[in-house]
Length: 280
Image 1 (cartoon, helix red, strand yellow):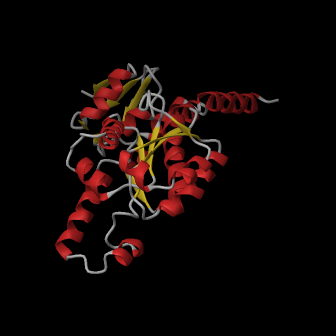
Image 2 (tube, rainbow, N blue to C red; image 1 turned 135 degrees about the vertical axis):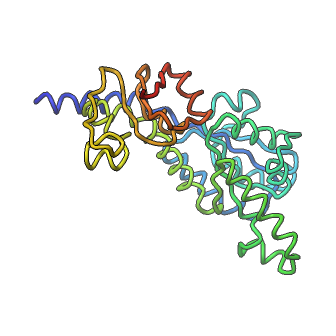
């Protein structure tokens, strides 16, 4: 086995060990539209190895088919609903809960769960089937909906999307949830993948397009000085949380004198002991 093959083997082993288990909390609210479509989707998630726990609102307990919910094989929980799950799935989201969350109201179990997951920057996937005025299901029930009311529903969905909630149809819950996990894992694995090549490759990932093409320093034709060990130069004008998440813990990120750093990026850097310095 060559050194390169051994390095790749070790890197893959680390990625496998660090891959977090996929555990989702399913919250049923009282939306009937899309309910039957979501059941096979939840079963597919279980078949993919996802651990699913569930809770219900009082209206869901009254309206939804309880035998059908139990047939999925999920575990009903009442404690540690946020800490032990990295995703919230709402397969029967109602306009009532969507409206509360869109306006920052957290006065019941479902809206509280949404608020906590969103503010903790955890993954949230929700079905818009029972809400979206442009969907065939909603239009079949309410063909004469006033335009102003439809605009209000669209606005609430747009607000949820702006919070990072991944909205989908009930029949696409499985693939939407899996895609969200894959994107999250790709971000978490990026530093290890980069370290598996070289520090130079990691630095190149944060170089601006001009520097990549010419090796010039800010377009003035001066050669860029080599970075000290543990220092990752970055020529991007905006440093976001995503940039910080791609770095190994403990490095120094050297940015341009005019680069802007978001508050979320500073918090992420502090949490991972990443020092941000500016070129002089």
